[in-house]
Length: 323
Image (cartoon, rainbow, N blue to C red; front, side, top):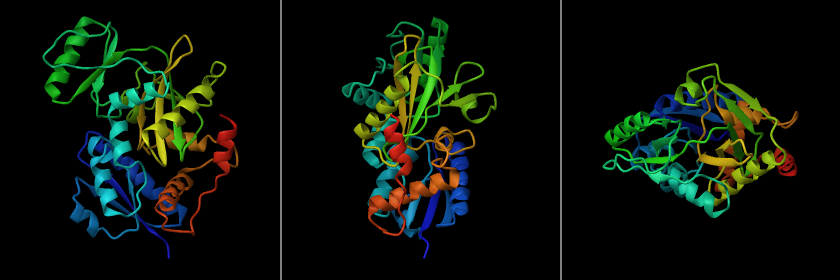
């Protein structure tokens, strides 16, 4: 009898529309994999009783944002006791908190910039311009401001103070945007992101088709190995599991600076983790059905609920040998 997988999508966070796209793509992929019974459930929010009423063997929560990805939903799933894909509550909260992530990165020797918490009552910028101001507990560049001038800063400060959300400020670093997806503790191929207008914001990620994605980009000697190792190191330090995406900026001096770690990356047609899985060497590549099935298998494995479904470690051995 096939295990039943319920893919959760929606939520009430700012990234709801992205979640709806991701959950639809995951459900379609799992149906193509033909190893599971698949249900897709669109939610606004859940409580423990409602979750318990859902008849399923495993949850695949494809939600993005503070509630669905940042710990509260993971609390419910962990208390429910059935397997689920992705990070547990503690890792979800640490990764959603950008300052906590950066603090842990610094403690393990992964370069990241100094950051400050924005004070709504203090209009002065604590760092030299240019800076980036962004919510501490959001993803997908929701609410992000790049401030090149004092006028930019005043606008960002006003908007941040009015939002009611905690914001952070960090130096703006010009450079090449690189991302490393991590699958079960092993790095996938690096992808370079080149937005047409220079800023990889929400529109560039999900709405526009003029962003260039380059798997296996040409990089200075040793950089690929360094950022792949840093991504895996941070994945483990945060206590993440199954999947993550780790973003870096490579500056002109060749230093890769950590931006953030995302514990439930998108699964839309623009999304980077599925793109990286397809970029594995011939014979090891994972298309969407294989990738999504692999993630379900990992969750089943970790819950010790099955001996029938097992993931092949062949691509992981290859990744370990090449980083």
